[in-house]
Image: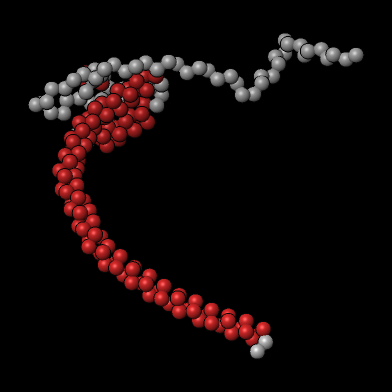
Length: 184
């Protein structure tokens, strides 16, 4: 037998042993993994049951809070509608005054539509240009006679806007002379 044949035979024996050992390792790993799965199953079930229990408790506690929040939001929306409608009416009247009645019809049309959207029970008493006591008196509009209303604080005045400079240069007037050119 040649050295090459001996090497091939030795390699074959080593490969056979490696395959046998690999098979044994695979069997042992499968056995260990199966044991781990068997031990993990009850723990996973317990974790799932606990999570379901906690989530159910949270839902049970959240339902009344969500109902209370919805009720409060509805109540606030019903109270805010008449106040917002009143604000629209006062603003429309002020716009009409500032534009000196030039846009009275458009302002009146838009403000009436907005007031009816914000407060469907609105009767149109604060339309732009009207001189009713409601339009002159700032403050909340009472929504329920049983509830006392608190006057709103006066609005903070807004400073006038700073005028912007013209975007294009003005042409020189006929009395101005062009600047002499500097030629040497």
